[in-house]
Amino acid sequence: MTQTPDWTADPLHWGHGPRVFEMFLEPTCPFSVRAFGKLDETLETAGADRITIKLRLHSQPWHMYSGVVTRCVIAASTLPGGKESARAVLAAVAAHREEFEFARHAGGPNMDATPNDIIRRLESYSGLSLATAFAIPTLDREIKWHCKYARQNGIHVSPTFMIDGLVQPNMGSGDAVAEWVKRLVG
Image 1 (cartoon, helix red, strand yellow):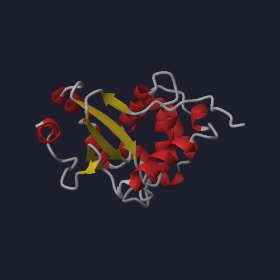
Image 2 (cartoon, rainbow, N blue to C red):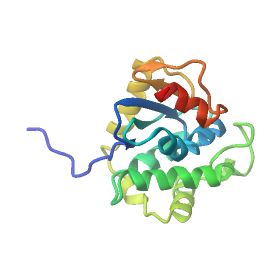
Image 3 (cartoon, rainbow, N blue to C red):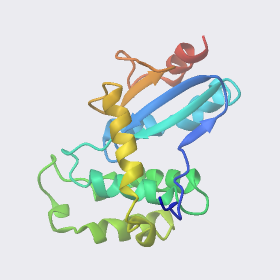
Image 4 (spheres, rainbow, N blue to C red):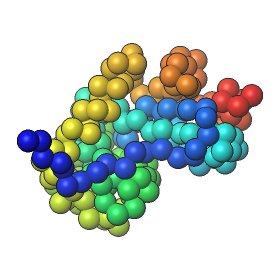
């Protein structure tokens, strides 16, 4: 008999339109942070009834605390507030990115930080209690889903964008929202 988990990760989806815009983001990546910052404007400009934005977390090993931060985002999605709690964690990372990253990917003050330090920082900045959800033993099931989905779609770096299931290799975080919207809805 298979046991049903006592938690659910809320999908990181906003909008309800037929056009699907998927953003593969690594939470501590500066380019992913820039793309994440355009989520609301993109949704508002294109119209929530015309597009659905789906965030896919894409942990990358050269961002040394990527795994811990990604797990915190997924953990937050299991809390009351679901995707909005996850979004609060992403916003906290974006606002304080240097506190969750190594200098030049290999040094700096975070060399002495532990995973518990990272969790406490995220709790402080987001206002959410993450430690218990972070420790859910089967939470890796959801994290692995994000990883597997990215690999199945040929995603290797972040940020990467897909529209209706097709990777957009010439779309980037530095593009203006107006350019994104033109590609999404014409």
